[in-house]
Length: 380
Image (tube, rainbow, N blue to C red; front, side, top):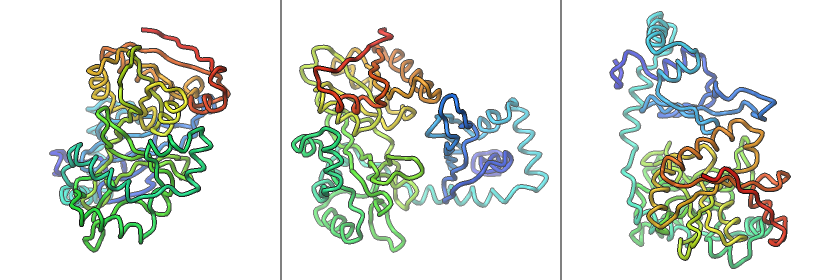
């Protein structure tokens, strides 16, 4: 019997359902998402990646946000109830047609326990990340990208954008400076121990781009998004994370608040997708913005809303991209956001603009401020 006290595990479910495996490591598998089907009406390309977290017997698709435990995976794909699901899975593994998942599962549990570090405190993360930023530079290529988005050089400096340090020499210098000056590394997402047992960080040539600090409500850096120079498999953004590495951790996808909430007479905060989009929208409008990693990355929102309420915020204005109007997956996420806002005791509004511009930052940058026209609907 495996560590989950069942006679089967989530890998048995994956095999039983014949899901297409894209990538594996000791603790996670990525498979083609069976819920992200190609749909020409809503524009979905069917390329969703379902992450299988072996130690937790759990799954989640970052694109459609379908998630749950191992029995949920089977019942959602097949439509049978949980009792029938158990019978089907047991029949499958008892016929001996499955791979030996028990040894893989046990190895995943052991590897997970061995490599996990306790996450550093918010203050420790902020201290290490600020020093890390001070040891990085902003190269011309990334700076020009930011200028083209409508930011000034002063604003770029204020937000702390840097170019991801991807060269080996940069790694050695930064790690040595952090260690020699007593900065905490263990328990800080993005850092890990390599095969030689030496500390390193998870930034290499394939994730070259803009390092975007993600600020908490109390102005602490809690992580970094990376805006890739060369998007990978349709993904423009990654997290500075090391969850699949020895002594590494997930970033946790923290939300980003653009500015201190002082003199917010309207008690309103605007919410959009991504730290960079939020920073640009704030820089151009002067309005307080919150950026979440994507429409489906909403686990951080209840704590965020609680903290915002303490600062006097009474209404959230949803500024998710305009594609929610023709992409059902995005619209589903927008409705989910709306419910979370209302359930957390805040007012909800939806903002829209010229639909030739997908993002609110794109629209703002393309027009003189006097020409901006926004529609605000669903006031609650």
